[in-house]
Amino acid sequence: MTTQPIFIPVILGTPRQGRMSEPVAKFVVEQVAKRDGVETELIDIRNIPLPTSDEGESIKDPKFSETMMRADALIIVVPEYNHGYPGLLKHLLDTNLKEYIHKAVGICGVSAGPFGGTRVIQSLLPVMRELGLVNIFWDGNFSNVHNIFDQSGKLLDEAYIRRLDKFLQELVWMAKVLRYGRENIASE
Amino acid sequence: MPAEPMTCPKCGIQMNHHADKLDSTSTAALAEPDAVNLELGGILNEVHTCPSCKTIEIRRAT
Ligand SMILES: Cc1cc2nc3c(=O)[nH]c(=O)nc-3n(C[C@H](O)[C@H](O)[C@H](O)COP(=O)(O)O)c2cc1C
Image (cartoon, rainbow over all chains, first blue to last red; front, side, top):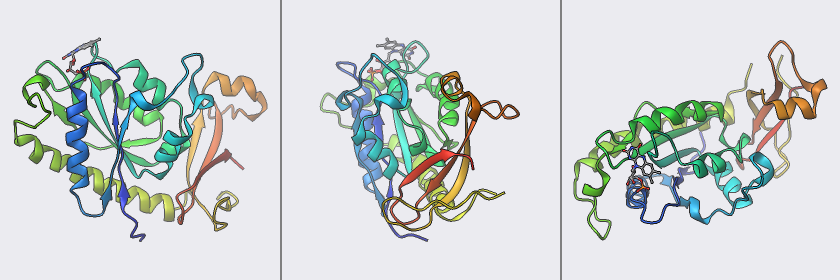
């Protein structure tokens, strides 16, 4: 089995000014980076130039595609907007396909309310499936997000570290299994 | 039946065909009506990954 590190980029899925998903995404990147044999980077949706005059693979951003090609798994940090996901996130995800197939994905939902983005996570699951991504059965739920971080973005509730550890443990396992499969197990 | 192996365009080694993905969008079907597999309801594509450099290629099912 290949010994290359597992690469798990984290997508920050909203461009909103004042977004609270940003400290969440930075916290997630920090936790992923702490794991042995795992590399990560933050993909800020604000930094990906996408036209809004078209949709799909014809408007691929080469750098984003290259990162998705290299990824073994993805983490999507997504705020809940009217019980759904930000349109720009879907616009971005739809620009690739082959890059995602048989790769693991974990979703961290962010909400101002008490449900930790569970509704946005549920609405993203079928999209992940159609993109060929493999959902794990752990989620990150960041409820009442304004109370989780201080003004400087410092985490105030250490329980999130332990919860995210379980999420990452499962994601890394799935990423390794799927990488082995992509590289070694032929479709029959 | 296993697909004809693909050769990695970057490093020249044999790629692994690990998935078949159905494109059931109407845009694909309109662009290539002859490629539509009527039984499956879309255009069938093969996904191949290079075990060495991670390049991924997709092509019409052979
Ligand atoms: C357009 C919009 C719709 C929203 N809808 C919901 C919602 O349905 N449920 C919820 O708990 N919070 C909702 N919120 C609040 C966000 O969850 C909140 O802003 C949270 O901090 C995460 O989003 P952010 O990263 O943009 O800050 C909404 C916010 C916006 C901007």
